Image 1: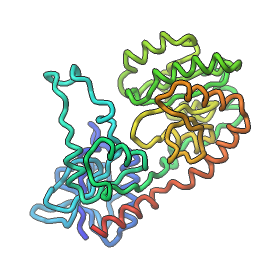
Image 2 (image 1 turned 180 degrees about the vertical axis):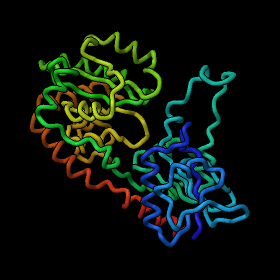
Image 3 (image 1 turned 90 degrees about the vertical axis):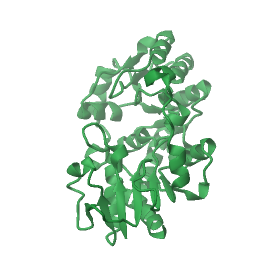
Length: 350
C-alpha cells in the first residue's frame, strides 16, 4: 500500500508541526510497517521529520502514483484518489471571523464541507466533534471515525508538584491564596466572559478567597470583550492575567493550582484536561464523553452551572480528591498507539 501524506495545512510559519500531529503520524508509521508513506516533494516539513523517516517513508518521486491519500487537516493532495482526512476542530464554523478583520471585508470561504463530502474517511479525536460536524455540515456520518487522542510527550507532561513547590508557587502567584488556573488560547471559544461572571458568583457563595489566574495567549492578546468583562467583574482584582511563563514555570503553576478551569466552547480536543490529569489536579470542564467522571462537569453556556462547579471543588474536599483519583485512571485510556491502530484499520479497508 502506497499512501501519499499531505501535511501542508498543519505546518506553521517556521515549517514545523505540532506535537499531536507528529505523535499521531509516528504511531501510524509504526502500526503499518507494510505500507509506504510518500511525502510530496514540495512538503517543507520533511526537513523537520528526520526522526520519523524510516524504511517505509520516502519522498514521492515525479510521476509516481500513490494508492490513497492521508491528510492531517482538510486539504487534498489528489482528489482522484481515495482520501482520508484528520479534522481537529470546526471552531471556524462556530466562531466565524468578523468581516472587518478580512481583506476587503470578505468572509473566508469554508472549504471544509467539500473536503468532508469528498473524503472516504474522516478521522476526529473525540465524540463531541463528531456531533458538531453533523450539526453544521450536511455530510454522511458513516464516514466519520472517532479515533481518540494520545497523551502529551513524556518530556512535556506536567507531573504533580511537591509540597514545597506548591507553597512557594501559591505565595508568588496566588498572593498566598490558592488559585484556579484557566489555560486559554486567546480565542473567543475560551469562554472567559462567562468564566469571569461565574467567578463573581463563586466569591459570593464561597468564603475562601480563591484567586483566578488566566494565561495570556501565546500569540496576541485577549480580545476587547474579555478585557471589558474583566473590568466589570466585581472581584477583578483577584482575576490575574499571567505574564509569559517559561515551560518549567508553567509546569509549577499548573501542578500547584487548586483546580484547572476549562469551560471552553471549542470543538478541539481539551488538552488542558490531559494536563490536569497528569498533574493530578482537579479539573472543571464541559465534555462528559472525554472526562467520564474524572472532572467536574458544567454547562459552558450557563454561568450558574460554572459557578456551582467552582463552589463544589472548594467546599467539598472529598469530591476534589475523588476527581484526582479518577483522573489518574482515566489518563491511562489515552494512547497514540491505540489511535494509530484505529487509523490503520480504516486505511487498510479503504
